[in-house]
Image (cartoon, rainbow, N blue to C red; front, side, top):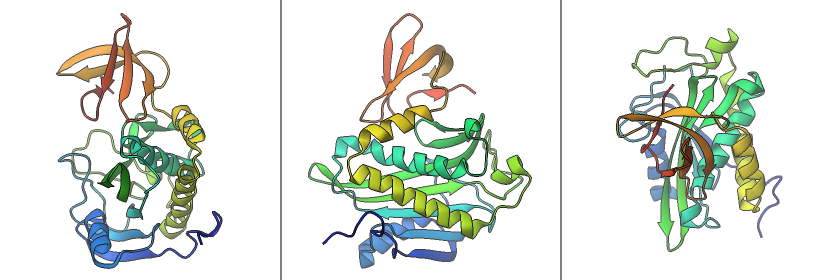
Length: 255
């Protein structure tokens, strides 16, 4: 019998590692070797080869930030709706950050970043396995800049919670809050509350109102965000009324 929503993930483990190349790689190996419970989190003090989207690397100073991977088995979710996982993970991070930072400053920058103002405070990397028409396995990696004050990688606009608050954040307490938030948002999806997820995602979307500058094929243009469809495509409407449906990395925000 399935456990109730309130205690379904209460006993799921958090695996705390001292040092690892990639929590995502570790989590996938864990799935292959031991079939860990849904909701298992792999967290590390130091990640030496953290990955962002594509060829990007994630910079994280040892002991200063949160780097984790979450194991899920979303059999209820059709493959063409997998972007809902990006949505709920983004919202879970936003929900937690709003306990520490002004709510109006926190937003979700499509497709996989969390922003504080115009600065990047967190990134998400989700990988799924599809069985038939449904998702069967997911590892969602999260990097959240917490107490790191200086960044050296050349990334254009990183920021941390410490930069913004001038306070050291308790990492253990923050990780517990983030786990609870991630699993609460996942329960929303599992219970079919997709309209709530859609509404909350839109309400927290970066630059959701007005016209802004975007880049496509090395050409800048102005457009407004009209929608994000169920497949995760960014729907942009140009000033002349023409519409673009963009996949990941096909367009970029000009900041």
